[in-house]
Image (cartoon, rainbow, N blue to C red; front, side, top):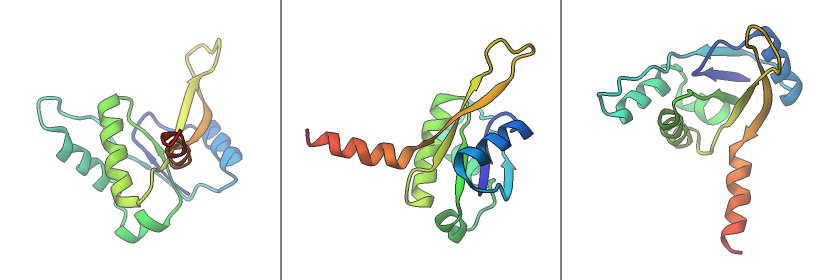
Length: 128
């Protein structure tokens, strides 16, 4: 599995949690700086963030990809739209949470959000 990391570095402990949750080995972590220039249009910057992964069209459509989204909400939303276009589905994403009482602050993997399943289930509620 390839992890596209648009946020803080993924620790060894977090990698172990990801493997346990997904049942898949991590073949590669691609760290991508998600800083944007808020004075410039967002769309082209997000295209550059996706391009920075260095994946071929075939890889986008066939590799197991997990995404650690950027923290900036509009960057995350726009990146999801870009990745959906390249992959043909919404990618699964990491949800991290603070470890209670940890000093200094630490984060653990809370869950893997399967956005495509959530989307498909929401379609069923549209008819209700």
